[in-house]
Length: 262
Length: 359
Image (cartoon, rainbow over the protein chains, first blue to last red):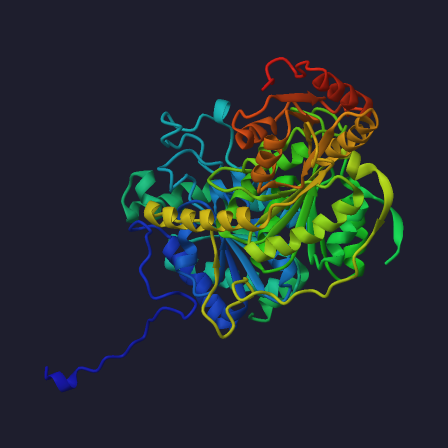
């Protein structure tokens, strides 16, 4: 084929809400997918310039490097409290926290409960990979019964180490919650559903309906000690049965937004 | 404005509002709860932010968020609650956002009691949470000073992008006395570094992370430079009767006020005694205490704790004069007569002090 016959057509670019740098995430980790989905939604809604993110402590501690928006870096578990302060002083802005399972369901359990209880008008992206990633694979509040981690080497023993925390189920009970759903990032069809849910969550915030959270079942091949494809299968076979996908709380006004295609 | 009869807790809360405080986040704890109650009523009627947080941990992190948004913001609490805030204070320091906190100290350790104490001196004055930083600490002795120093706290917090803690105790929080409120200031414009949404500008980041130790060291040098400026410019104190004094009393806050009565009574007995009352505890008035130690024969430190400030007095005096101590602990407040008796004993050449805390 002659050179003149080669026509390049760019069909896939980074959204403007992401910075043009590579991430520090491990190969096969779904944080990158989650970041991109959030960024695409912010871009499509045209709210990048009014968005303020709050990063957690954990693997996504450097999330602020990747989003082209204002950002704060919170103390471990305190992102919902910090986001409360930011949102109350900037009520017209879009404020989201991005938190892992240790951050949100363990050390930050009080803060997430109360931000939902207050119906704080923020959006929480909850990345649940059933393990502490950054510190090297310790047991998380969402670690499955029998799951081996570096701090549950014989597998999580529910007799002594308790049961996994199901945060969507818990937070759906709060009257301040307007939209609380669980999605998965293990295949394309589910990624698309996750994006749709993220859009609804941010629209719920824009409409001022109250607290919104999208839990994303995610992979951690590094600390699970399996390959990236096997990790996606593990989500499907082990995590989804323990953390069923679905809509746990959809306020009627939020359902109307969703139906309107927003 | 005319003087009114004001309760300390209500007075500092209202003073903060007059100083342009846009947001208050707190949690009920005796003996400062009246401040939270006052804010819960006043802030909404002014269209400002009040949130009763689920804990002091959350309250200080809400302060952190609001400060990151560039607003004048504060919290207040009492000793056990302030302990819970240490994590958040450290992050605030590490992010260089301005914040004001009022600590109405009570007896401890542990749950202790709700009586006035100065037991938080080390925790507050020596640096708060983890890492190399020291907040500015201001110690009022009257309700009027509590008002004035709260207003000053916002100005200093903004000037240095730093934490300013007003350190008072339960007696000052609970007492009523005549005082004058400042006039209402307008709400300040948000600074350029604030998180407001990156509209037409590059994104702002508020963070305390420097993952590269070399960069963290550079940042620590920056904080050190800031603290050196604070030490050079923000020392505050009151001296009374120290010109011809042979005995120098050093006491802050309520203990300073009680010592003032004792000094007056001792003067009436012909004892040449003066009082140095540090108002800024960080930066500490080392130079003034040093100069005092050059004039007097001995010093008497009076505190409502086991003598936590003695270390600073000792640093300032470098062993030049004997340092005596009179203190009450656990929420007990010394009477002026007790301090007067301590002054008499020092004057008579006796050694005054608690076992183990004598200079």
